Length: 97
Image (spheres, rainbow, N blue to C red):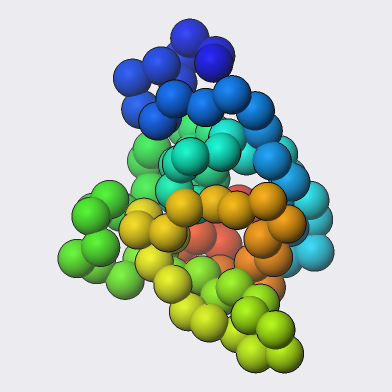
């Protein structure tokens, strides 16, 4: 684990592939999607307007679920190998740009 993330991430052994809006990223397993965003964009995510506990709706993402999309809160949903996030809410989009 990278030292800068020791205090914020759950322990993980490896990075897994997650597709976000058509681009593949490697995110730490055993962590939420929002922590994964923080892993790839530490400063932007940390400064974003997120409550980190599901009380706001600023971390909405839509995951491909078969032929459909399912909306989930990135702060409450763990990443999974092969996960495909097809859409993100405006606040997340601003972080990823």
